[in-house]
Image 1 (tube, rainbow, N blue to C red):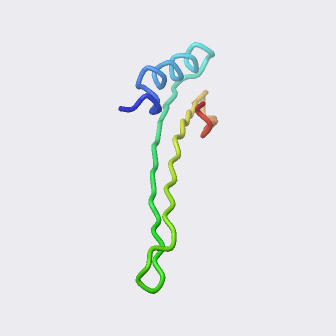
Image 2 (cartoon, helix red, strand yellow):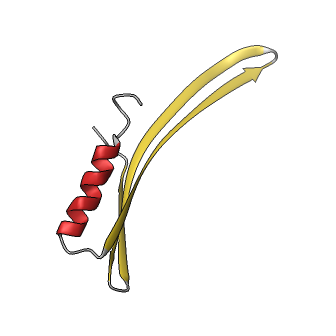
Image 3 (cartoon, rainbow, N blue to C red):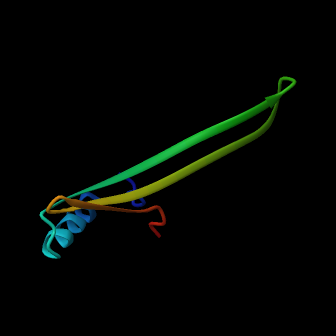
Amino acid sequence: MSDKTPSPDILNDLISAALKAGADAAEAVSAHRASLSVGVRNAALEDVEREESRDLGLRVFIGRRQATVSASDLS
């Protein structure tokens, strides 16, 4: 796990905070995505692009209601 990937402690902290605030149940998720795109034209390399994203999500349940929030700026 890199230092840029949210630790399981952060996910546990999110769930604990939601439960402390009155939620009946909560779930948290983190995702790390990476993609690489290579463009070639006439057998010559034209461009290379790399993209990464990291996201956190929290779903909270109170009674029969639920709310979901997410964040992608983890700086």
